[in-house]
Image (cartoon, rainbow, N blue to C red; front, side, top):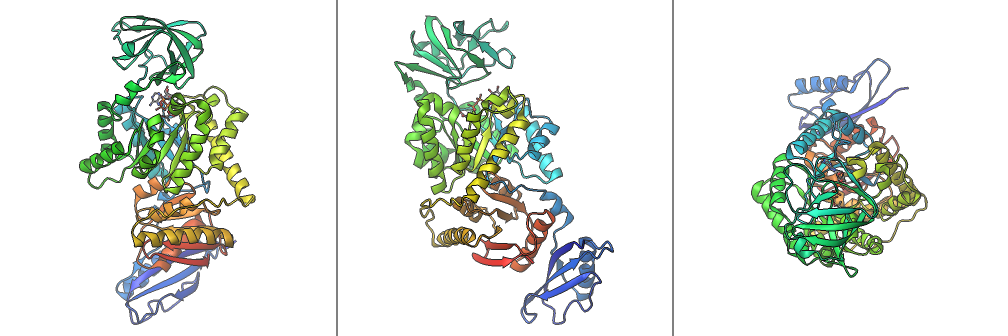
Length: 570
Ligand SMILES: Nc1ncnc2c1ncn2[C@@H]1O[C@H](COP(=O)(O)OP(=O)(O)OP(=O)(O)O)[C@@H](O)[C@H]1O
Ligand SMILES: CC(=O)C(=O)O
């Protein structure tokens, strides 16, 4: 079978046709622009006639023609660009994996990338900075060598009350009726049995006999039975697994005791040092725990700018407290995205309220054009078992149906026994629900309010809204977006069109950040000023990756030219 090879070249003005003869395998030339203008570009397609002609042969041919003509810029996709832009899935829902002891080795990270991980999350509650640096370097290597665009999200610890390490043990089991001691003391000669260290000095003063103590949002529960100096004795009322540095909340008469938490700074001194580390390592996202107001996000942004003027790190607000719900809109407007951190959120509000809050946050983020992540306990049982519960599958399906940008694995990938299987479940459920949605033609008519203030931005927004609508109405095969900063790509993602959105950018970091957003399949390529040449280059790349074929109908939009084109792939 002849294999079509497409490439394009552009050149500065020449009065004579540059190419006066036909290369034996090149079947077609098209003059795209009038040579009387100051630039000329030539589109050609070549067929592999079985004689072993390759793109490189064709490029060499044009390069030779360029030599004789004086100046010519060969603008084909290079081998390096092909390698850099490895295969990408067209799954719309993005997948985040928390990296921990179960997934930090190079081959484990690669297995996650192969399995569809778009973003790796590093939780600064756990592990040393050295450990995190090592993981970042491994991920970078993986991207460079295998053509992935896995982005890195650093998640701060936050200054809420939590347990310390369990004397080196990976976990401990609290059984029903057992008495455990929660203490702020330091134990130099090892942790006594059934003892938990608490990171907050005022713990014993604040808590009262009769209070209910929830570990990790209620995964394990205790009742406070006695206070002895810095030690608080508790009886286990709901048994379960205690994990190092798990979050602690206490409840009195059915209400969360939160006065003290409300006074703690959102970003602790340790968090600031971790943020410095994240900036120095060039992470793509910093997720801020227990955000209470927009102020802290603004403060962090100016801090990042002051530390690294050119930094384009995105700030993600974790919605996991009563205050973050109260100030939701202003927090989301100030941030670059949000995470529905259901673990801690479920410890601060009644559990039955979490699903409706999730839906509200997901919708608001979409209206405000901010990517949103649904996190925690999606497949909790898979920490121990190789298959999920039916209820977990239903929960994942609901998050996909709500069209959240991304789903996140926590313990399942960090320390679970089946990280790859958990990722496979997220992937297959996402694909199934997305397809079901498209087959049913259930384009939801979500009201998308105008979000931009300048007239130029309004134009981009209108182009994207119309493009998505047109794509659904015409049943096109793909949308192509050529974007410098990623803004136009995210405006398209916000519309959640049926077809995949291939986003082409010249920046590696923009590409990685787009990898968090619904429906975007990001690539990095260098471009010329000539749109036809760019189109050809991207057609070539996607054809060689098997993601489009001749005859496919595509719409191309560009924030460089603020333009729309509808065309068939040659
Ligand atoms: N870098 C790491 N090193 C060691 N263990 C880790 C690491 N990251 C995660 N874990 C383990 O995986 C578990 C689940 O991870 P997760 O990120 O959800 O932590 P968490 O303590 O519940 O914090 P958060 O409330 O911020 O999600 C942790 O409790 C911990 O046991
Ligand atoms: C992810 C997280 O921090 C939570 O769910 O609490």
